[in-house]
Length: 192
Image (cartoon, rainbow, N blue to C red; front, side, top):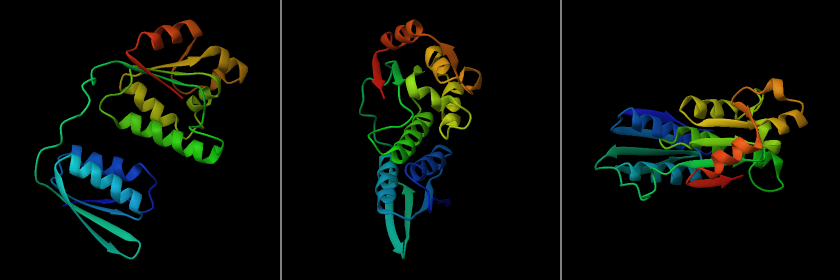
């Protein structure tokens, strides 16, 4: 039985860790988590991949014991082959709480980098260009996306404005025309 110790891990790390073991071919998995949100998220993942799941609790520890019993649920989207473009204009995701917004943006990019179907292109502009700096906690996820084939475009006007052009750690310095051409050429676009 494969053991996944996700105690103390923030969302979505328990799901990512469990998914990695499933992809390696694990048929029996024990996952340790310390919160009910992780229990719910990991359970959904496991059940969707054809596992039966049992939950036990011991103090703060929640143990999910899962065994492969069937086939994975079929994908519900019929648009899996369409090209996706993502325009990132902020270095945080969401509203006014910057600390939470940084955590959410890192989690979003981390999840995106782990998906089997990744965006064809991601463009970073305005404060979003700060995410491609080496000190950004999300930079490694963006590098992973680029290595997996996602085209990363970084607005040159924006990097010049913030005086960071020579500091970017991933992507290609681009321009509004190229960014717009790539974004409008996609089947679907997300804007953050």
